[in-house]
Length: 105
Length: 115
Image 1 (spheres, each protein chain N blue to C red):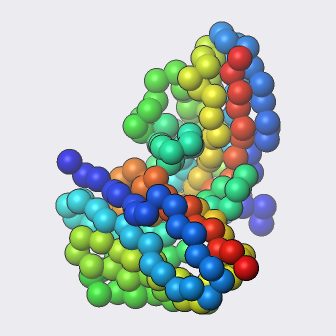
Image 2: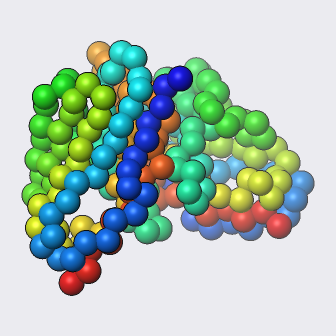
């Protein structure tokens, strides 16, 4: 059964403490893996699309990577404004439940 | 560009009432969709459309109807509201490409409470 699983559910970091969020999937025929950021009370905002294993994309303190079974969203030296829920979606399959990131100053 | 707009932002209904959630986009996107978001359950797809006149069901379509008469608009109708439909509803749109699925642009959401 196609499945998208995100871990951890919640992550608390100190400002400057780098870490990674995981999105694992069991989908045949990957046609794109998408990362979104969602702030409280707002709609998700697109961050990255990855299409093939080995692909990487970067934006400010965020870097997304993709393997054949999972994607990582690496956050380097996070700031409090990076606090949000990060969602993963694979092809036309359901979204993952998200990782709620809190960065403390 | 206004992007994806949704109205209303908040709504309270009584059980059994009907209403329409409005969604519009000005990006000429073919693909539009409706999601509901509940705590701990992520985004669940209700209905989607790949173009004017074409709609299809998502994961959780029961109790909802949609139509797509224009490229810009994709309203979601609740036929007879139930407390289980209390949720935050998001509309999204995207262009259709070779891969058939592209990044989606989301509206700000409608927060619906059914008493």
